[in-house]
Image (tube, rainbow, N blue to C red; front, top):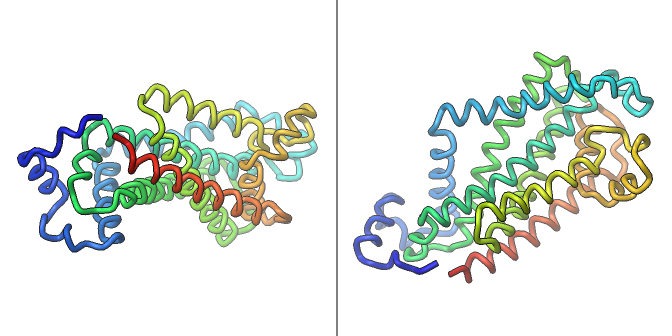
Length: 282
């Protein structure tokens, strides 16, 4: 992308859009992250209709899945959960985290082609702070979505977390961490791609096989052998199993440490690749 934003008029416009110009030359990294995160949050929550439909979408999907696949509750691997909705809700929380992480890449791409990140390059700030702010803002949005979905599941769908408020809170916290780590993967994908269509196609190729080859919607014992083999190395399986175990007071086993380890590796790898590609992006 041609760096046409270095003219004086565009420089003044870019600085004015980000607040007091005098504050930026001496600002530290976390000050930059705070300012950029606040800007992203104002954009995300500024449109009430967008907020409403963004919160409504996971609840509607959960309602549809819980009704369409309600017969799965009779299967031996699900009957112990005392209802398919109890089996489904923790997986849906991870699914929401995955979808929101995918939108992190879309949001960054919109800022790139909208010229916002280009204007930031003429300011004395760290470009990595732009990426951190993007992931933090989307994580805050994810936190609201998870809370609304969990409350709606309890009130309207009869979800009963056996782990109580503490167990459900820990499950939400784990999902939030996993979502933030996954957002770095999609941010890294975004910094290497050039078109929104390519990003969308790549994101869905990543998301759907991971979700449907995991323990999200069906017990693994009912799946073909090759799907069970894929599920055994699917990182989302560990996140979903750990979220279920926390929310429903079931044995954790290795699911929690494995979920955290895989999420941490994904975040470090994604952040490293994203920072390198974003810094060198022309």
